[in-house]
Image (cartoon, rainbow, N blue to C red):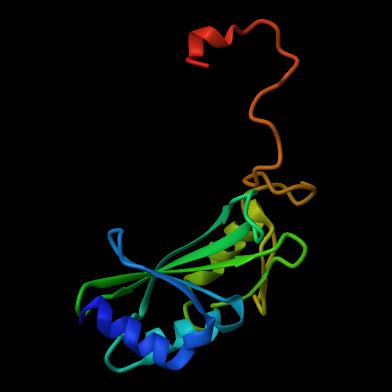
Length: 164
């Protein structure tokens, strides 16, 4: 199975909601609208020819300069043909909701909880969406790039020694 076959099947079914296709990296990458994400991954898993039936990983990202700065990336694997695919979707900070995949992959449970814990992305329909690694009373999401990396009031550091 080659990338052309996968792209053809996906675009035939979800054409207007596939925002971009990238074949330049090590694996095929599809960026899709969040409204079709669950249906697309169900299709990739259950289609007799595609059989992407293993969720390798699921994680969040934050690109503050983008219109929809929060994203979720999924890596799926077809173990029979040893083919991998990457699915991306992006959401706004005002509405950081994506449908859960726990009904398709039980492994998504902990990965979605971790993504919620660090990025604040809500997974609609998740059976137990609560913090998993950070304390419950933490009032921010530590992996978002919303804070400066260093204390701007420091006077004891000379940036010339750090290539700046």
